Amino acid sequence: MVHDEAPGYAPPTMPRTTSGHAVQQRPHALPPARRRAVQRRLLDWYDAHAQPFPWRTARDPYAALVAAVAAQQTQMSRVIEVYARWMEAFPTLASLARADRAAVLQTWGRAGYPRRAVGLHETARRCMEEHDGTLPRDPEALLALPGVGPFTAAIVRTFGFGDDAPAVDTNIVRVLGRLVFGDLQPARDTSRAEIDAAAAALFPAGEGARWNPALMDYGARVCTPRPHCEVCVVASMCAARPRFAAGEVAAPVRAQGAFEGSERQARGRVMQVLRDAAGGSVTFPTLAKRAGATTAEERARVRILLGRLAEEGLAWTDGRRAGLGHRPAKR
Ligand code: SF4
Image 1 (tube, rainbow, N blue to C red):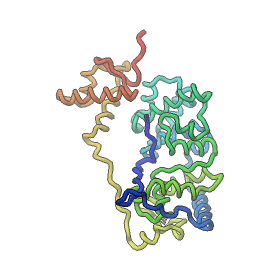
Image 2: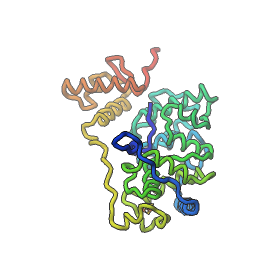
Image 3: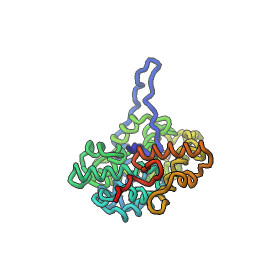
Image 4: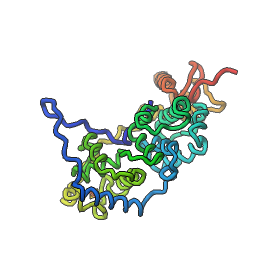
């Protein structure tokens, strides 16, 4: 199962006192006049700077789903690539549901964790079986689908159905945590409960399809990790602005562990060998060799990884050969 999180955001747990009681949340709602001014200025900014991503205007829940899943912890340039490739291969939920697992994983390629592609595939099949071949509009039904969490559900609802649903990704966490609470590094300092409360309180009714991307783009281009407060359209209303103006800086959040030598890297190598396998499968010795395993210990590690990939529905193996997705039926 794919876990849907705000990309790159590790929400801090609610602060607690030494006796274990949750610390009182800070006020999360701006005064009405300031709230309206923030909404107007950010929407105006968005109208002038909107990124023309096709899923934002397609009013297609499936397109919104694909984009939201692809965007999890992935750079936008790669999202655009995988989105185009995916929509060409599987233009509809029905075509995705009919596809075999190997084709799904081939199309996903190196766009990020392949479990997300499996989640999309399983979601398509579930929608065929349980929702008359469409994505449900109901938030609880959406959240019950494989790999669909609060962020993806909010994107499907706003872009796909035009509903009001605040989305929270890393960029939105940064903007709201600074603007509303005055935290310089909200990914570390602002609790998820506070961010969710602020996102709901600031959300302009009827504007979901503009508001969510406005905040995302603002966090990506203006309220960046090192913010451009000097050109910010809401600087006069931002709680963090005085701190930045006084010379405080946002301490970097803990970087992700090194990729070199990691299990993530080893999994990526094995998946690449399986994607490249001529005829759809490869013998285990060849797989181990192409994945860079030269010692008995490294080959054993590849075998363990292959077993995990098989458990996750990403690969199959019969002990001698291995391939992408599910083992083909014997003819
Ligand atoms: S003033 Fe600076 S910190 Fe505040 S929202 Fe604007 S860019 Fe972000």
